[in-house]
Amino acid sequence: MNFELLVNNSFESKKDYIYRVIRKNIIDFNLKPGEAISENEIANTFETSRTPIRETFTKLANEELIEIYPQKGTFVSLIDIKRSQEAKFMRVNLEMEIMKLACTEFPDEILFQLESNINQQEFCIMKKNYITIFDLDNEMHELIYKGCKKERIWSAIRFISGDYDRIRTLRLSSNPDWDTIIEDHKAIIKSIKEKNVDQGLNIIKEHLTQIDNDVILLKEKYPEYFK
Image 1 (spheres, rainbow, N blue to C red):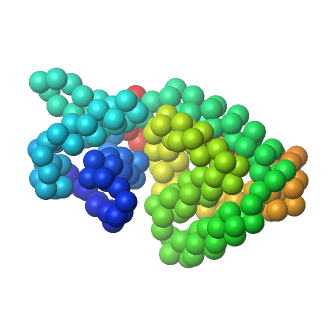
Image 2: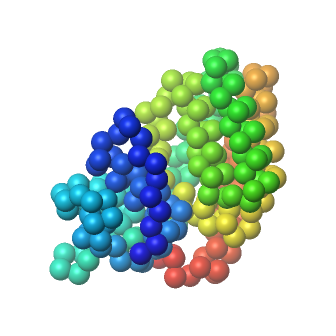
């Protein structure tokens, strides 16, 4: 089992840390769709009992990122395009409303964080580090929700976005049109700074639906990953 550990944040519990690590390994394809994952092996990796592992598995199963079969085992779920489309529908429609708010009023301190985030993304392009770009991409969008005081909405979107995020990861790793993505991100931030609602709505809709063009090709390239 190819498994990458993350830095353990001092504020998070053991259970929360285990969940965050396993989820990220699924999204990053260190744990691949269809792959069996062992409760005992993961418990040994984290030097913990099986109880927090079972709790984490239940949480991930609720997000449909894993499937648990009694007497058979636990497996990373295959990517379901229908679930991905549902997540995209929710995110596009909610994020357009978020952009309306962001382009009306947005705190300077969060805007500074967005601009810092873009600088980090550009550095990652130089290093061809698509995994970190993906993380920074999510962080950028989360900051916009935070600036609009809608963090709970971001959490709700994240809960159903496992398949959507895995397709995004595949897209970045297979055909990284990073320059276009960065330019979109810059345009989104520019719209917020200039309070240009129409521009912001056009960009965010196009940005979040670009994935539609790649799904068929990705399914042909990685048929074993999809339902």
